[in-house]
Image (cartoon, rainbow, N blue to C red):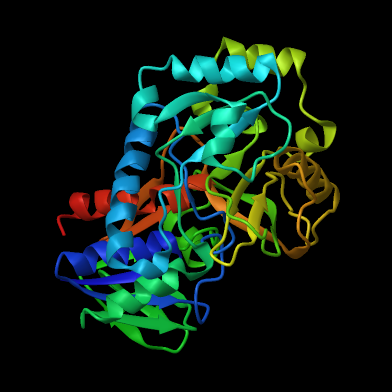
Length: 374
């Protein structure tokens, strides 16, 4: 079988990975010279802890297993089973963590409530003020800016993979064939459109204007090296307000009696933080849903994140060296892991994983491969 993959972000690349792994020929086409979208502009976190129970959690757990296996084969991914800590500062925040621990699926997430002393034993960089922490053992991380490149280099070794950068697919030609903006036609047995947040043009023509997917904008930043290991990923209690696993009466009480910081509320924020291979910290993020998106970034969210991080670290944050915005695609029915739609004979659109793209992409692609009989 010959598979044409359009898009070289993590979702497209994982579809290429599964196709090549099952013995098929793959041509991957990317409109940029290399992917530059949401797959590179995220935390690189394999985030199991906050996922909704049922299909979403099962997908994340399977993806976590796949990431670990691929990471052993491709060291350049920078896979590490670092887990995550959410420091807790108030009884209301601790009550939400205790409600999460009472979930039937708490054990498979690796939940454990730690004292502040136990949390600092796991992550000595957390010298700030907090009373307890929620530990989530199954969370992990990869290097988002280099992961796709490392996967591509491994795919090229197979002899069954071709990468074509700097080409935009403009047209589906017949069954399972596409024409790019160079005028070249690429013929296959299946076409996977993994175009991320690019939902106009060809995608709109094929899927129609009522595609149940929206675009979401975020702001993030990265610091100079911390100068010491941050041994786990770190979240704050605002992540409880964002992730479905933490919905409970205790969360309702937190929202009622401990309102979110006004800046965080305005920008729909949570703190997530992970250390990069060079020692710097990737920190975010915000969520903007209303169109049209601003073309610039605003400073108040960065100031808020800096304050929160410094309370956990108990020290000044290193100099911020990068600030950026990104846009990802999310199913409007946020309970769905991904939007998977056959848009023509032999052509499938895979989009809308939302903030779960990096976490779930290996399992999303595996499901596609299984459903298509690869």
